[in-house]
Structures are given as C-alpha cells and as structure tokens.
Image 1 (cartoon, rainbow, N blue to C red):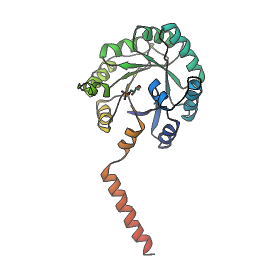
Image 2 (cartoon, rainbow, N blue to C red):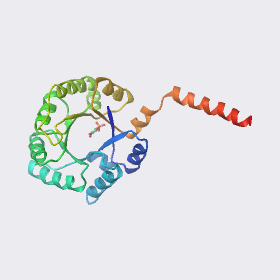
Image 3 (cartoon, protein in one colour):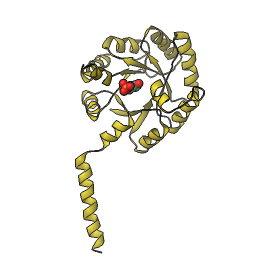
Image 4 (cartoon, protein in one colour):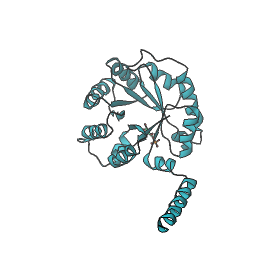
Length: 227
Ligand code: E4P
C-alpha cells in the first residue's frame, strides 16, 4: 500500500516528503481553506505542492458545478504540472467530465465515493483513482472499513486497460482518521491510503519503539561516558 498525505499545508507535505515514504498528495477545498489561501492563489498553491513533491501525483479538486466547467478547470489544473491529478466529485456532471478529461489523457481522482456502484461507474468513466471515504461512515455509526473492503474487492475484479491513460484504477482509501483505519486499509490490500499529517505521525510512533529507542540511547550514553 502506498502512502499519500491528505493536506494542502506546504510544511506538512515537506515534512512527510522528507520521511521518504510519501507517494502522493490529496487536497480538497476544505483542506485548502484551512491553509488560509485565497481564490486567486489556489492554482499557484497547487503548483507549489506539485513542485515540492517532485513528480508524485497531487490531486487538485475542481469546485466547478457543470461538466463543461469541470473540464475547463480540469484542463487548466492539469496544465500546471504533469503530476497534477484532477479531483472530481462522483455525480452525473463529474462522471461526464471525467470521461472527457480521461479521453484527453488527464488523470482523474473521483472523490466522495460511498458505494461499490459509484466506484465502478467512476472507473468506467476513466477515473485513474477512486477515493472511497471511511471516516464519514464511522461518523454515522456504520463501518467505513467494511464499505472500503467492498470497493477494494469490486475494483480489483476488473481490468481497466484502455479506460484511462495508465490502464489502471487504484483505490485511494480516504477520510482515514486513525492508525487502525490505515492498518485495516493495508490488510485488505487497498492500493493507497491518504492520511492526514497528524494521523501519519501517530502511525509512525509506537510506545515500544519509543521506549526501545530511549533505552538504546541511555545505554549508549553509558558506553560513551566510560571512554
Ligand atoms: C480525500 O481525498 C478526502 O477529501 C478526505 O480524505 C476527506 O476526509 P474527511 O472525511 O476527514 O474530511
């Protein structure tokens, strides 16, 4: 399973990238709003992220309401850098725009996926990535991990050759809130987990690792002191 970071914060992206295990970035309008960025700076900000990540896929979400406007905005976003992936919502307008962008070689990440039919329709419309949400199911007392497993199984049933420029459709486990969500995504074989920075940090730490490291440091200090 590959790790993406789910943020538009440049500092968080830079730090996660420095860890050496980052394979991409996903953003959305909420995450961009959290940076305090303006409308005028949106595209420049996406370009900064794309450059920071040196070729890794960076999802930039369109906020347009019609298929025509999504295609127009998607082409503009995709022209910013070769690693920009256009993120679109799974709805009639989004599917139509996805097909048109995919036909022009643009990679699309279809988001706000909550069901197997939505994921399969998106993949058939040329989505390079589909993003089923986990945490938002948990928010309404349903098992997001179980729903994610259904999407992972369904998408892996088919060969997506010819549907998009790479001929593959990867599942991005999205709306992950806890290390356990990340673990479950990995165990079921999801292609990608997109993880907020704070959750990535929690995934990295384990109390036994921290205790082990402290003990090694303390013992090494004794060795050094004996010199
Ligand atoms: C990523 O593509 C999604 O936009 C994001 O994971 C949503 O997460 P949330 O449900 O925590 O807002």
